[in-house]
Image (tube, rainbow, N blue to C red; front, side, top):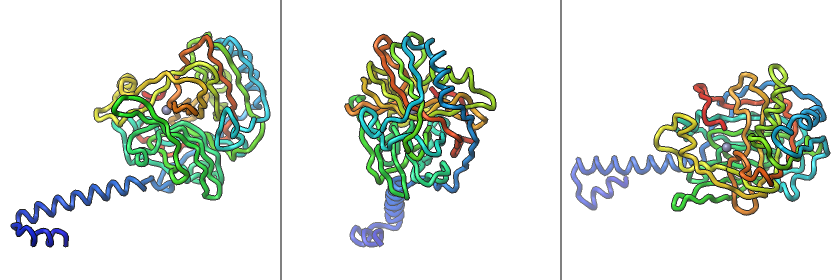
Length: 357
Ligand SMILES: [Zn+2]
């Protein structure tokens, strides 16, 4: 109708009418795609979901292993089993109180959906908790790619949210690069935005109080970051049919950390870890940083990314944790729980191993 009306006004020829019709159609197609991308998330029921049980030793055993062996990387190490402090309070300020109640590790997607070329249709709605974790209500913390359809650009997600009876309490932050000056900006998602993109490593529980593993260390004397040092130490003890998965939170209490934020999606293929590092934007971010994520001591055949933590702050800095840059003065305080299962959602059919640092 629009085309005919315009044709009458401008007395256009049949050929011109056809060209105009093509232009109008292509604009409305773009508009439709844009609108779809605003609401788009893959249907959880269409996604492949596998899960396996994880080994669950007593928390005290983990504390003993860490007290004995984490000293290779930190001058002061103190691990113990404690009642989880209320994580809603400072300094953690998370969406739920604890890490208890049906704890499980959930990995969604993977780096192969980011590189070589980002697959923009890989958008997942974390409200789909039952399909992704078997739980009816969940406190979800972890590291992933933020919802680019919401942000308008590729971004980091520092996931921290409750879903109970379909009701969402969202405390997730996203972090993105400002194209004009390369600076980094953090924002909090509204309750109405529960999507992530591409990949995520998450810890689900019912957010209940209970016993957790506390790990408090000071002064780094080795070359490993906090997460790697815990994972490597535990991996020497728990492997093969005794793989364990941990999730939770840690505070970079003192010092600074090297963290990256993903910029806009690369237009050229990223074919190696080096390509990814050259594309990422790195920052030296200051304590206090509140990190959330997961680690596993091995891979029970699910193509897992065995460690991944992102951190946010109350001073605007947020990103993907690599390592502290202040070994002399650094102090970490972590609270973790053991996952009883690992869930693997939409694992890439074609995989590769680079870009999992
Ligand atoms: Zn990350």
